[in-house]
Length: 292
Image (cartoon, rainbow, N blue to C red; front, side, top):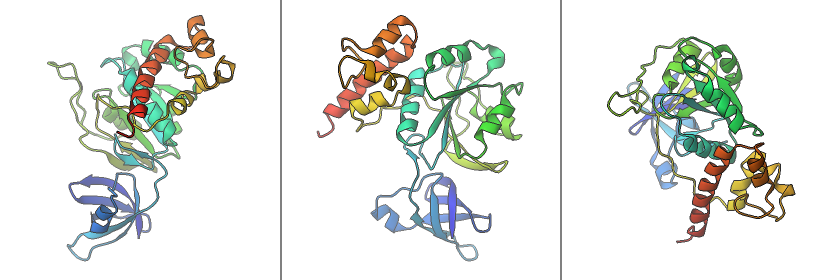
């Protein structure tokens, strides 16, 4: 039988069967560990159901269309990066996730939640990401503004929500699908989010597959990215690459760089370019040390 992993707790996995629509509790066969394969939420798998009270066995992980290590999920088609004016958005984290989505064949989108508290962030991000393929949605989980448009954009895609704690991912799911998930908000002491989603989990909602992930604040840059490949992952820079004096150009300190000229002229965001240069530094360091 075939199905998709909805959640994993310890060594047990809950799989939604494609043939009968039922959920089965399974344990992974040892051969997967010998093959150095770890089942992920979102994986499509082959399995044999258990008999009676016995758990069944997860026997094979089918080829993945996409994969993220953090959050640890597979076969995502749309990576929805949820941000809000409160807590202070970590745009470096957002850019790292966009890079991972672009490399992994996923469609990244930004969802600005809590616009009932103000729309400045949505306007700022629209300017920062001008020239990219990114769609930016402005919503309020509290008032419902923008929720129907976001729900329609998700239809037909396997969507994963990711972002910092307390940006309102669980509240967003409640508003989108009429759920009653636990929500946390901010800790008064630390002004950081209290985790309410403790592990990645996939849900079937209104005929859609949606993955919720725990909030987090730290994400290392992926290793193994060649600097020129990294530059090409920024579509607004790649579109200008042919106008740079030197080829290839990393759009950093090179003279005659068209991207730098566009930033200085105000047609591209200086904030995003500064984050790009910082991440490029990490990419260069990782690339130099890739063999040792």
